[in-house]
Image (spheres, rainbow, N blue to C red):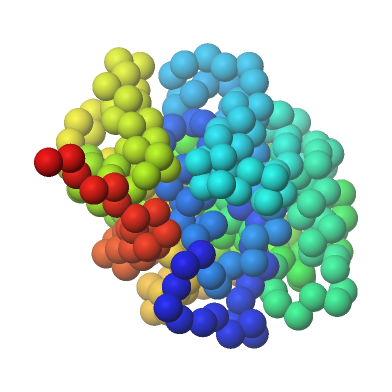
Length: 308
């Protein structure tokens, strides 16, 4: 990461990125943003599944493998392939709330959480289902006071409702809700605040080397795909990006500490207890989030000169 400022070591944090990178087009932006943030000591990236359907409509049977390949493609474009640990997570959702799906990704979370000699705290950001954290916790419950999870997922409070990331593993979400793992949840009404126009991405991202071109082109291609279900057209929601920006600045005064709910099969929240608390965000600053990402891309991947 190129900067003209220094990051004191005691202000850094250990970070694992868990991403269903090939589901649609926003994970790639969040991955790049995190890798370019000097506050983060990246301990690995875990490829997550995204269920049996890409963006909810196109059948797939190897979604985690697709995420794994996409992560490595982004790393190649950043000249980071082989320099960042990449692990495979679970291939599917938990079958129940007590049986872990053991994977290299879940093992990575456990290993990092149990490192006794580390001074800086461990965070794991989840840009898709929270399967691998639930698996790690079921494998080794003692990690529950040693990790903070930031999860993009879940319906609007207090009622809940259908949301894609949650739909891909409701059992895992319930495992985490009833654990004592510190959880920062960014539900659908909040992550959808991170709106940008495709024109803005063409201006501020596409000129910045092969990486910028790929970030823009893969999003524009998906936008024109008739299978893509959302009628954005001229706009996009970079809904995974709050998982990064909230660790750059935690947006104090824009979240509530609430009692963790139980989640039903139709993704409704059941408010049944008062002791176990989680942090739920009502607002994430779009300007701060997007400008920080655009600035880091521009500094690290200078725009190519336009042909005259």
